[in-house]
Image (cartoon, rainbow over all chains, first blue to last red; front, side, top):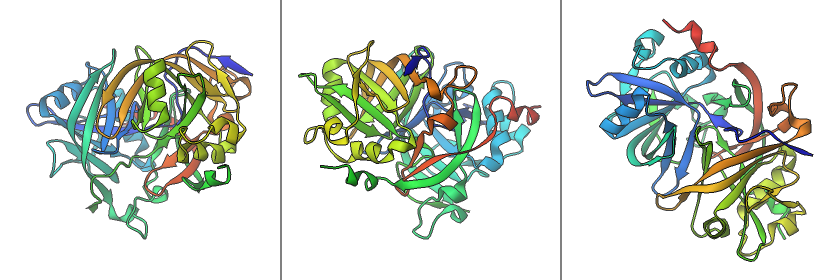
Length: 190
Length: 190
C-alpha cells in the first residue's frame, strides 16, 4: 500500500556535483549541487539547478562557463563544506586547502584533487522559480588516469563517487554491481 | 594526472527513472530514463530528458502529465526492459506483467510494483537537440508504507533503488552510509 508524503524534492539517487566558476575578478568559487544530471546526448549536456542568491549563479551568468567536478568519498568533508558556506563570505578553495585549476577549454576552474571533471560552456538557461537550470554543453571530460579501467573508461570502484540522499540528508557510496544495462531486460522481451 | 576522454555524457550517479504516461487512447506506457533529476525546490520540480522518437514524448506533450516511478533492484530486469523496447511496438505493461495504476492527481499511470512514485504535471519544456527536457511539477510523492523509516521518511535500505553507470552500462545498488550532509563539512569551515 502506498502512502502520500506530499510534494517533495526526493528522488534516488541524486549526485554530489561540485560546480566551479570564476567571478568577474577571476576569483575561483565552488558550490555543491544535488539538483542536476545529464540533460541531452547530442550535443552532450549536463544541467545543474542553482539559486540566484548563490555566487555561482552570478559567475556563470557573467562567464558563460562552468565545470562539474565529482569528488571521491575521500573528500566528503570538503564536498559537504562547499555546500554549507557561500562564496560571498568565504574563499572556499583557500579554507579547504584544495586547488583550483583553470580549464584549458572553458573559462572556469575545477578541483584538482577530485578525480572526474566535466568542462562546460553555458548552452541554455531555464527559470523555474527558486532555481535557475543551467544547461552546459560538455566540451570535454577529464579523469584521473588511475581511475580508468583497462578499456580507458571511468571506473566507479576507483572513482568512489558519492550519492546524496535528499530524504534523510545523508551521503552514501556506490554499492555492488547488479547487472548489465540494455541486456538484463532481454529475458522479459516478447 | 588527468586524461581527456572527450565530450561524453557521463556523470556519477545517474538514476533509473521509469516515466509513465498515457497516449491519446488512454493506453499506459513506461520508459526508462537516466537523464534527469530534481530541477527546482519551489515549486518542487523533476526533469527528465526524452527523445522525440519516443512514445513517451508524444504522450507527455498530449496529456501534460507524467509520473516517475523508482524501481527497487528486485525489478531490475523489468526496469531494463522498459528501456530497450519502444512503446510504439510493444505493450510494455502487458509483456512485463507489471500493473499500471492511474494517478489520482495527474493524468498519467505509475507502476504499482515499484515502491516510490512522483506524480507530475508538465511545467515547462526545453529543447536541447536530441533530447527535450520535460520539467514536471511534483504534485505528490507516494511511497510503499513498508519502505518508510520510523520518522515517516523514505528509507533507501528498504527501497533498494538502483544507480545506472553510463560509462560501462551497468546497474549498481546503493552502498554504505558515509556521513551526514550539511554537518560533515562543518569541521572544514573557518
